[in-house]
Length: 175
Image (cartoon, rainbow, N blue to C red; front, top):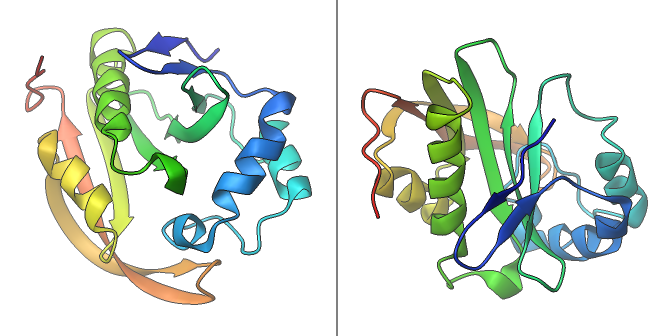
């Protein structure tokens, strides 16, 4: 079960069918979709409903809808549980960029993962041209690893990516 997390300005909560329309609108923006490795473009309301239903995930995946009190503004997840590590993903709707929301979210997810989730390692990846994501990873102490091309459905072609890793031992919580 996905725990509810809170930050100064956001609630990180389980997804609900009521989120589908807002999710479709936000991720349906090409500037958002092109930075995500598993999102088609155009992204439809039916795509959002399928995602919200949970049918696209795996057992044990944790997915949070980021809610600023007016509804969904983005999503964060910890997927592919193997007992000691998960893969973190996150995105934010374009109208919410540049407000520091993602720093709050990533801090909350990492803190939960290491303090309560029992994880030893978090892995992640980003497209090389996703400067904002790469900055967030650096800010929280992720080690940059190997790069490789990864197919991006919204782009319709492979794009260079970089991987990131953060261990419990390397995590330094910040206020």
